[in-house]
Image 1: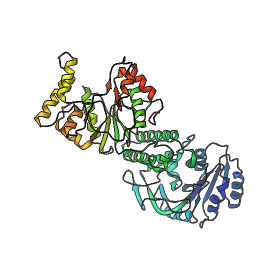
Image 2: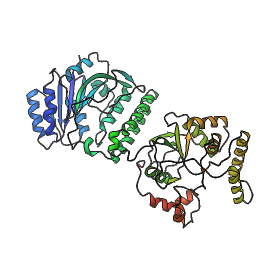
Image 3: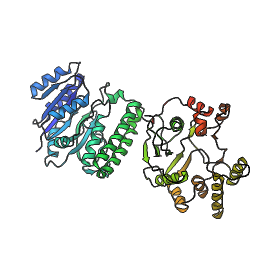
Image 4: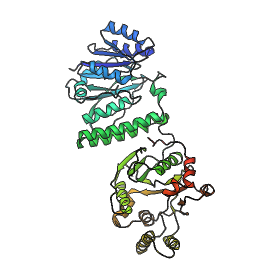
Length: 501
């Protein structure tokens, strides 16, 4: 039967130490190792630990204040048990916890065993049914905690898994990302052994969370998952995808919303941006600021490139080396429409769309008929066709052949697209470049007519009078970079969004 080492990091937890350490004294099975690491307490807690450690034969270590990760790593180094468990100094165990832990590990088969926990010593949190869970085919809550698990000590040491020292928040999640990927799964027990309390008002979970910490942690988790997959090979890909999904579920939970990770109501549909493969994209940055402030959405996806200073909810790298721009867009659209992780209906955004005021409902919009748009383009080119009007003309003939309407949905505003319906027309007409207009007309989505709100002239110094009439505007690269419209938008959205690194 396995031996158990319980590691307890302590920093200024004097009011709760009797509850925590007392639960160890009251264990029905007395044969286990206790390692207390006092992390420089200044509230007299070290004296409480010293007294109880001496009376019960526990191992006590004192260190200068360096953080919980350093304390836990020190405990891992000193542990001699077959399995280790982490107990927080303001929580406690049930009286038979050690006895049950030993029974769970008697055949030494599992490297990670998860058990249930009580909330504030009362009703237990929900947990997955008892059984063995392999990634990615499992559904489980509270994967992120380390205090509701047993870890095989040899497994941790062989895989060199340790807590990241210096991380201000989320050390448990980072630790479990490594253990889950290295082990491909875990054992879920049906017992509840841990009392998780929330009466320490100085605890990070009670008052120290903020948007900046959560955003940084989310980025670190996903980066570390990618690194582990690159190091470990294809056999870890499924587990990594599962963990990324768990991270998003975790941070969209009610608990984390309360602390600001989600600062506004979430919509029903994802946003998808097709992003140019460039290291910086100033327009996209301000587009996201306007979206975060004024649009209702679920998650934001980048397809294609990802600027260094931006971090979407999800990023899918896509090669953009096709001969033409429309072929690149079509290839990315095909990938999006076949990605079941994206909501069935999604908002298609360009990086130069800016939402000027809160929008909760948005009807489909079109810029007149194809006939009128073609004529407008010809008038601008002194009666000559451009590549744009030629493409519109080809689409017009195709739609007429099939008895479809001919509205111009190639307007610079968001469009709600159904993945299955768009996929159908893409496969039916693989050479059609005007995807939005093809989709909108083929499925007769209707909508309202509106003049295209794209501003292309840098010298429009009366832009403030014009732009205020819109709820959405679009820009050209030049008009945003050096024009009045770009200055107006930068002044309107000075605050960073959660997508900025």
